Amino acid sequence: MSPDKLSGLIAELMRPTDSLSRPNLNALRHIVGDISAIKLNIKMQGYELARQLAEALPVRNDLAPSAIDLRSKPSTQHDLESDWCAYWLGRLGSPVIFHRKLWELAFVLQTIWQHGLMAPDRRGLGFGCGVEPIPSLLAAEGVDVVVTDLAPQEQADTGWTATNQHTYSLDAVFREHIVDRRDFDRHVSMQYVDMRRIPDTLRDFDFCWSVCALEHLGSIAKGLEFVEASLATLKPGGLAVHTTEFNFLDDTATLDNWATVLFQRAHFESLARDLTAKGHKVAPLDFDVGQSPLDRFIDLPPYPGDWSPYQKSIWPANPAHLKLAIDGFASTCFGLIVKKAEA
Image (tube, rainbow, N blue to C red):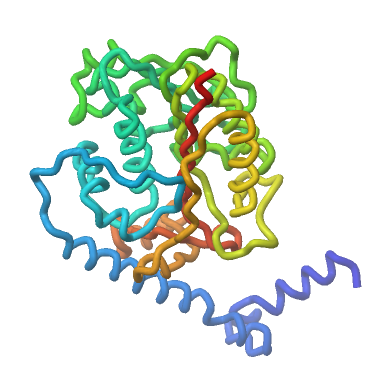
């Protein structure tokens, strides 16, 4: 049977109804017919658990930044329950909810602060910044920031504009509840940069960062190359902190050569060995993905960007997850911390 005929046959078997709108009663359809409802049951139970746990967190209004045992690590429920996460999310004006994207923002800010780089006259470089609030918070601390993202046409070619995760202008990263506009304009500038080809003009920064961007460079190899290339933008002893996708359950198969690639433990270990051999310092690798209830909830598609208007009207306004399935692979966020060699 030709591939086209086989595809047509499978499509016919998968139809929920026949030509007269009667139930399709073949065995294959019986097997898969309830999968969508099962997925939605799992999603809603996970979202409800996350909502209840977030509401049960104590109100913390008198927090100050505090040092922690900083490691290169994945997002966990324990982190988002911590005072250090609550402090940075409070600075961003965000409630503490159990969402991995909020963990990424807090992780990057904690790393920059703990290395003593969130201070006036420091220089930071953000890669693939999209609509992040990080530049506004850094500007409020007197840090000079260069925000970068793909040029608009390249963004359109890669599909990022369809998800509103791109930066057309500095307005996309300005947050008036975090920083005065005059201070923002004084400290923040913007350049269009392809992360696969960092220009030589971007040099002598105290730190650089990226939030879930390097997995979109086309391959695992290109993502790892970017991490090392980003060190060239730093002064000796400068700091790089990057977050990305971590395929934490499968040590054999993963996604590569795709719009979104998934890094595995072996990739981070190999990168750390290579960078250490060149004199750089990588924060200890910690692959503990957590043991709390939300660490064991793996969200399933469809995700909010794919919901219909009706689904958005009846489902939670702030769906929360720390782990999710990406094309069948369980993934979470992983933060990498690298200190450039002193010489």
